[in-house]
Image (cartoon, rainbow, N blue to C red):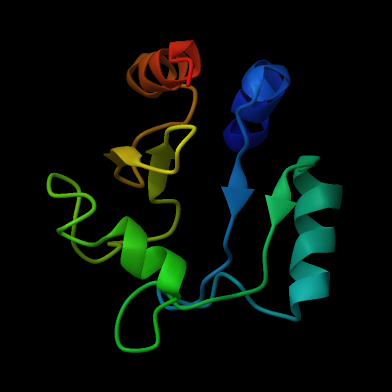
Length: 123
């Protein structure tokens, strides 16, 4: 899994992938939170944090995703999550510095460049 690959590459420099299962886009996150986490760990070797299933859009969206998609916080990348595997890069202060569509591969040069730039900033 490419998310795990980028976690492995940058984790020792303070980068963390965190996953939030969501079933607002079809029946992809089925089963209990525990079984979903176990499936990802067994099937894909995931070692990064996977949180409980949440909603990412709408009235019941998680406060964290409301923050990530807020026009005030993220004017360029604001708006609803369009599908599974939308990706956000936050700096060390928690500021959203990039949003990537689900089609962008985590190990792409585009995404690695943003991660490396964020890791290079010292606070």
